[in-house]
Length: 327
Image 1 (spheres, rainbow, N blue to C red):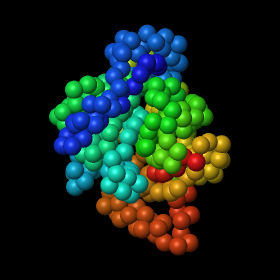
Image 2: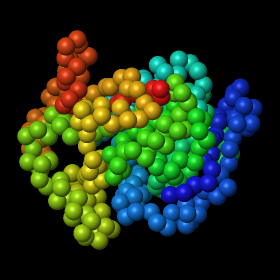
Image 3: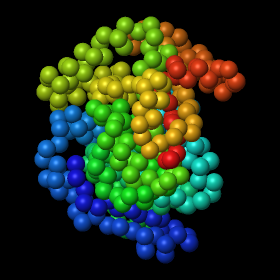
Image 4: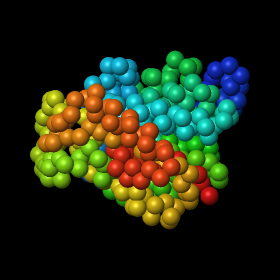
């Protein structure tokens, strides 16, 4: 997907207003039609991911926005903890500075809005037209006159070299067939000493150790989606009471050893890895412990993970939040 120039937009709040008007770069053409015209050769995998996230945009918004007390699904709890961890990492890195932030795969704009609230200068891309629309609507109340989020591709970022202090790439890499081009592009646009925050899913997570569905049926589900008409498959998936995050397209999961090898070949030096969520334990996709007990076990393991000599517990968390500094 090709975008001529991504918008680097700044907050028009308080004393940032003058600075933002000077620093803003506008897209020549950010319409979905232009996006697709420039990417006539987009591969089938990316097109399916685009359709999936456009069709499920409202679901992702609800997962993040529901209050912690009302979260009744494991994926909602994972997303809540992910948000909390990512914001903590960002705030520690920013140390009250105003940063130029690029949110890749911004979704409905949940993290984008948090960056705006903190006074950062923000830009964003997403592969899904619907997500782009929702993200822009979410932050237009902060006084932006031009779209902050545009349709774009992590493997082809239209930002200048070393233009960003911080890049958020949360749960994006698992949807790609290969990491290398995306990592090169992120490294190119990030300033030296800048930080990228990744979220990567775990191949060996504790919750699925004893679940045959994880080892067998998930792979057939992926094939089924591609063999059947995608709209029909998507409707059946969305109608399922078990529908949750990343059931079709998270086809790439990682081990910590793979991650270590991956970052050795890049611009990045890992500064911190945080394990995120350890449950629930399932058998054939059904929890075999009460939700409250699963939450207590997960919270207990998260506390233990931080203790000296127990960092190995990260190997079995559901996902990792990884903060990397550009060398």
